[in-house]
Image (cartoon, rainbow, N blue to C red; front, side, top):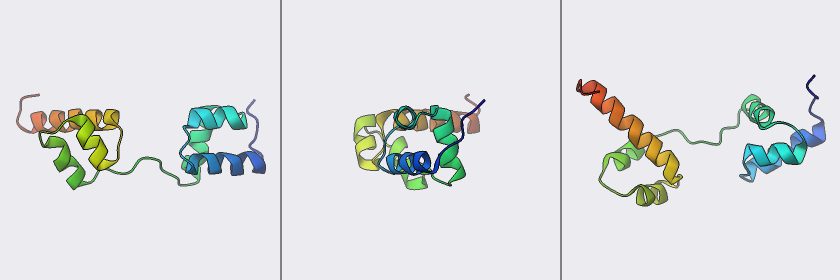
Length: 98
C-alpha cells in the first residue's frame, strides 16, 4: 500500500523541484518513488519542460551543432537531438519520404 505524503514531504519536494533537482533525487530525499514525485508536481500544475516554440524549431533545422543550439536555446543537447529528429521525421512524412 502506498504511503501518503505528509505536508512536510510535499513542501520539501516542491522546494527541491523548484531548485531544479531531478525527481529521482527528490524521491530519495523525501522517501517516495520518482513516479510519485512526478505525479505530485503534475497535480500541482508544475512543468519542468518549456514548450517548443516555432523560433526554437527554426534554430533546430538551421545547420548548427547540437551543442551550439542547446546553448542558445538553454536546453540540453539530448533534448535538442530528440526534437531535431522528430522535426526531420515530420518533414519526411509531409513529403512522402518517411
